[in-house]
Length: 423
Image 1 (spheres, rainbow, N blue to C red):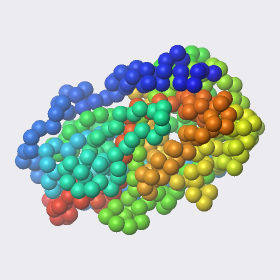
Image 2 (image 1 turned 90 degrees about the horizontal axis):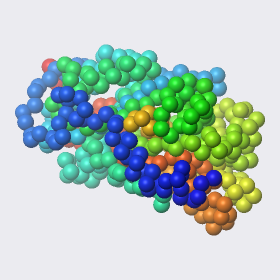
Image 3 (image 1 turned 90 degrees about the vertical axis):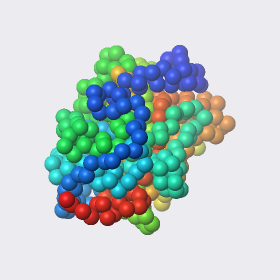
Image 4 (image 1 turned 135 degrees about the horizontal axis):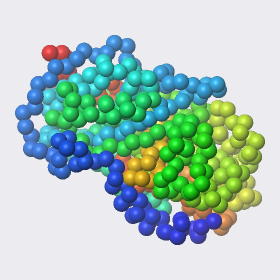
């Protein structure tokens, strides 16, 4: 094992600095001709666009994806195979015309592609900067922050995050082009800043493992849905969409979203740990290889045995630690994370939905198990402590996802009247 704060000879802080350089290869707004500039232009008269009617039958909740997803034989939802996160800033001061342009662009995609992984799934989330700096009001979500002593993420301050997902990677590219420079482009109102890409599902990580952070020898299992080799989105360790939905107030039927960009360093994971040792760190040291292979719908890994894991085994399981954040035995966040090769580096875009950002903080804090080293010095913040040794958080941000009717410039005065006109 590495020294407590070392990974492959680099300190975590030095690793983060180097990984940040690699992350610069993520598509940014200056990278495509004519789509973006380095600074937002001054306020201008916006074009009046034709607003298509809403597509009938779409759910009020933007985040209501699960009913459209395929499931495995145990009833676990299978996430869309490809994802993109598109980040924007508002051009100038927001007006009802801004809202009309964005809503027109989103409705155009909804008319073009059916709702679901066979067509296209979309959510629109708004960051604190939009509320505090542009609307001059209190944000419904706090700014993101570091949530452990060993991470130092940069905090994104984008106004808007669009999450696009489907089973066809080419379709995501088509949707992005439509939003940036198609007939219903949203760029008259919004400045495109960055795109992050990724995938999840059996076979995809193995097909994309020849990148930094994955050791030689093709160690990622051929059928693994994620780089670390294990299933993640089991229905027993996912919050339901109902559980993460805001029940009242201006964002009723919406939710909140945290987006973290992590790089992965899996040399030790695959080269120095055998399958049983990886299971101990992903789930719990009390779990055997046979136990892991028998998992069907949950991997709670009995949080009541974490004291035994610390004292007897000197290893904490990731699932075991996170299970301590459950409420009445139920997970409190809904993960829609996906692997990435952005910047030529193995990584993870961790997208979490929760009713309140505090639920994400609670879950992430449970991962730290900060007092364990006082009981057993074999455990530190990043050694023998779940998967903390192998993930490096580069960026993080919080967003609120309004209901579908409120998704275009929420709380902006005059938006409702602008969106009632369809011509």
